[in-house]
Image 1 (cartoon, rainbow, N blue to C red):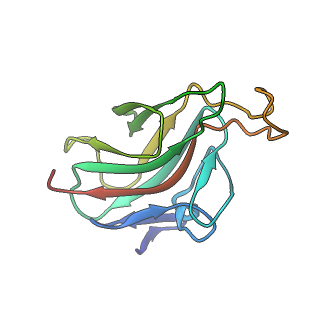
Image 2: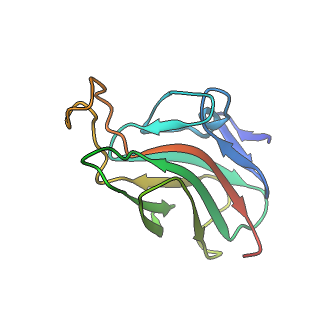
Length: 150
């Protein structure tokens, strides 16, 4: 991937935003994500998170690979997904999944695009008596990819 403006990466078809210590997600101006817990994923920390990116080709789908924070008193996590302020998807997630979000041509703009996530049931393990972790967890993000040709 190449960068077209400082701190912002460009995604081509088949490129991915990869999370974790070995990932490239920090190049996409992340907000609302905590520290990397492993080489393969990064948890959100709060009720919302976002990334910024540019694209070099028309896209019509965004794939989001996530693992929900599930615990004894948390049986699912809700994920609302927005692209440039437009709603593109919702899922109630109970296990690891790759969420597919079809998008129309007006959703992706030239220049900066903002992919935002809202996680209304993000939960702190400490609040539910499962340790001392104060982060408000909803999802461990693994990878996000854009593609064409649904």
